[in-house]
Length: 163
Figure 1 (tube, rainbow, N blue to C red):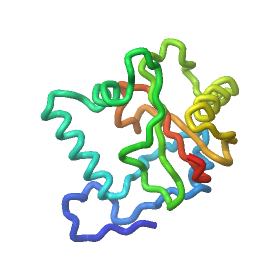
Figure 2: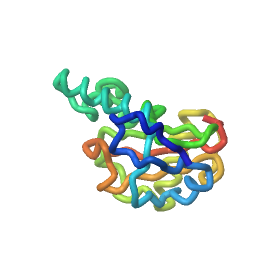
Figure 3: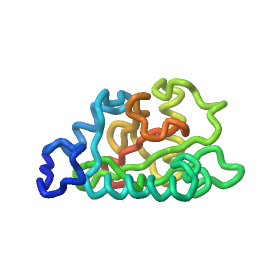
Figure 4: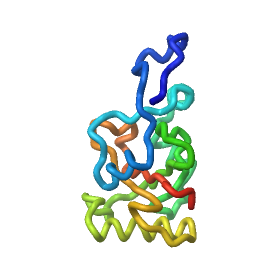
């Protein structure tokens, strides 16, 4: 349980207490996205909000920024550490896989083919033998919980520190 300092009036949108995601919490979300909002630590949320404001002032959107910052011209996907991760317990790393062109991407990312595809992307990127549900979990947020719905992506959580 994380408790906010009550003097932080700029964070009124946050509940006074929220649960930090643990390994056991995240395992429940493996290919089974939560139906509720996942919170960031307040200082991370403030950085995210300020980042979005700066992007808007510069006439760009978060999804355009991701494409120009992380994709090369011929690249269809990228795997990056989440700069604004959800609040997790120590030792858990939050990554995202972003896709620029979804024409060859299955609608459902939870069937066996998709699980093998995601595992292959992670093994290639991190040069590690990885087991879903032990080393990592992933999910795609439900439409109501997507902060960047314009660019398809999944959240990947490294549970063992391998990446």
